[in-house]
Structure formats: structure tokens, C-alpha cells
Length: 277
Image (cartoon, rainbow, N blue to C red):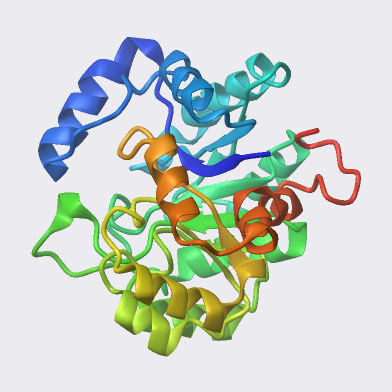
């Protein structure tokens, strides 16, 4: 089984211009067209079973329409060989955060995505604290971009390892995922500051850049039970990231945890839940 825990999908009518804009901003080279159909093609190439789609709100007013599309994805792609499971999105400046988190929970979302850089807010902001506190109370997963974002080079990093550690110590939410292996392009600090924390790291937009030995140091210190395979498709390809991870020779037990077993826990499927299976 293969679960890609970090992908992005955009509505067809805006996918092309959104992908073009983001690619130019970050000097990126997308591997798909950003649509659900494009993601399904990527899943087919990788023989992936489930992809988790992670929407981002860049302003609070987007809450209703972004999450309506996320709910549509969940209804449309809830069966078949390849499944897309979308999280919800929320912004730290949203009003009535707990009510909105409860609404997402009641509508079947297993978690939410936040992005401190796109949302122009540091991860220790009170809004994010409220989101994480609500998620802990509601047993929901929170995935955050962490580390350097290639579209914001030269600007202060909004979720560096030191601030992540501060928030982790404050909230203690065990379903908190630091994307990009704890902090994109800040992995030495991840090793020093985060590798003993009870949170998850995903591998999105990491495996093509990180030194394999550093990856393994973080993995063995942090524990294979808290690492999730992810590509950041369309910004990286699921196949290439899968193959890089396999090339590390970690062994089947560790690979199975990273490729799908840990993800099933966060998607509430390992205990017979109905969110994804």
C-alpha cells in the first residue's frame, strides 16, 4: 500500500493559472497540471492507493468556498483504485475558530492544513494556537508548512524549528504534522530541536534535496513511527520520491510504516474508522 500524505489539487477553472503563478513565484516545475485528474494520473504512475489533498486559505473569507471544493473532492473520489482524501483549510485570522473546526469535523474532514508563509503569520500566533487547541480537543490532524518556502526566499521563515518547538511544548497535540521533514532546508535544526518531539514529519519536497545520511539521522532519532511519506505533488512527483526513499534500504518494516501505516493512524483507518476506508 502507498499513501502520499501531502498533495495539492485545484478546481479545473483556476488550476492552470494557479499552477503557473505558483511555479513562477517559486521557480518550480510542476509534475502535473494541478487538477484532480492530473493527480490521479500521478497516483497511477506510482501505484498509490490514497493521496491526501491539502488546501490552503490565503485569507479568512475563503473558508466557505475552499472547503466546499474540498468536500466535493471527498464525495467524488471516495472509492475506486485510487482515492483522494482532502483535508479542510483554515486561516488563523478566521473568527469563531473552534466552531469552524467543529464544522469541518462534523462534515467528515480528518484534519486541516495551515501555511504560515502564505497566511503571513508566525506559527506561534494566537490564531494557530486556537486551531491546534481545537484540533487536539476534536481529535483532528493539523498539517503545517514548516521551514523555508521557495516562494518566500529572503523573508523571515514563519515556521522555523525553534518556533515549532515552542508551539509543540505549549500545546502537546500528538496529531500535529510538520511538513517538509520538520522544516524545509533547515534540517540540521530539525535534528537538534525537533527530532525528540511527539509530532509527525512528512517527507514532502524533501527527498530530492536532503542528504541521505542526514535524513537517516533524523529518522532514527525521531522514530519511524512518526514519519509520513509525501511528495508535495504537483511540485514533486510521487514516483520519484517513492523511489528515492526505497533506495535508502531502510527495510520493509520501516518502509511500511512510512509508506502507509503511520498515515492510516492519522486518517482514523487503523482502528476500523470510516474516514478513508
